[in-house]
Length: 173
Image (cartoon, helix red, strand yellow):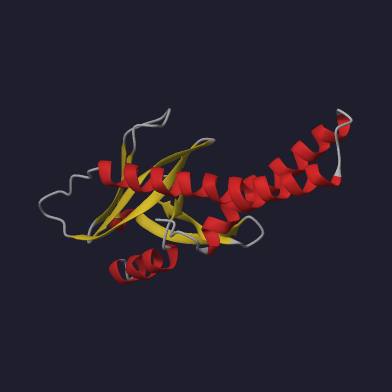
């Protein structure tokens, strides 16, 4: 989960606030209503209020969605930990929850997705993984798991912890 006021939180907040501030300031300039007061109002409105409010809304929605998702763990497997995650299915980043067990990785989407459902990746099928950082190295949460059949691209909260557990469970990595 994204924690309130973490680096990820501020990346989302400023990723919303800065473009909105620029767009609205340009809009005011094109309509001939631009002034220093408008610029200051836009800075305060979008960078100090709007961006953090947008990020807070996303965090609260993610927490709510995370609690609503229940992943059924097979009886012969032991749950290690659950993480908030997105699985890329084509171009769509399908939001949901990922469960790491001693024998598999289980992903289940939340209901606010176009593509829904569950994905299972068995630990023995994983041949390798690659980690990437996104958005100018500000977000360290992308991982691609390679199997004998296909690659699975995830965005996982607490990726470093996930990778350490994955290495511990699959000694061939």
